[in-house]
Length: 298
Image (cartoon, rainbow, N blue to C red):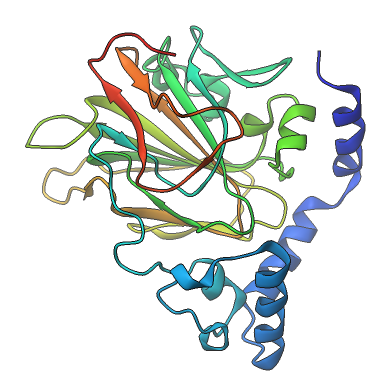
């Protein structure tokens, strides 16, 4: 059963006006407030221990808005790509990873959720990941917030799934049932395999999960996906062979404007996660995440 203290800790989130707080936070983050913006960024860097030495622009006074700082680029070479079929797509901390039990994804002790729920209710799409593998990675406020490709891929679909905006920190993950399938999210479906691609074969899903104060999520092919928040599911298809969206392993695919979580789904097959991975461990974009066609691992 979930820890009672965790359930009690998240109770106030059910009462907070999360949509209004997020809209307000988005306005603050996008405002170009001159000295006030610089003061806010300086406080944030000190409060969360952000490593600005890795940033392509280390001078905080050069950022016109908080969002510009938050989605900052890194210096070339600070995130080299490991030689692996799948590399970690983000900086963050491992929430959970491992096998999908038929259609059930492990969230935290006492909590599971279904692939169908995560993927916006599309049972046909979800069935492609039955008995597959998943990884959930939490991005804390101090982390680099651009998201990169774990392997080569060709985009085929994108969904914007409306939902709640609970926090996605570890305490909330332990205390809110089905958290990642309840929160607003952007689902990106890629196909992989031929034409000299590097990494995985078959489909994979990369899901950007929103949270309280996450003003928006964006992808490199679409731009800002949300807002707008229409209250209904939105879908885009990318199947035109004359205008494909292809990305290479390590390419940027999107970003969070204020932090959140990514969930990756892979189909059934022989996948062995990095032996050094463990729930709660810190990870960096580009490090080895998994190898395929290896002896069965975790």
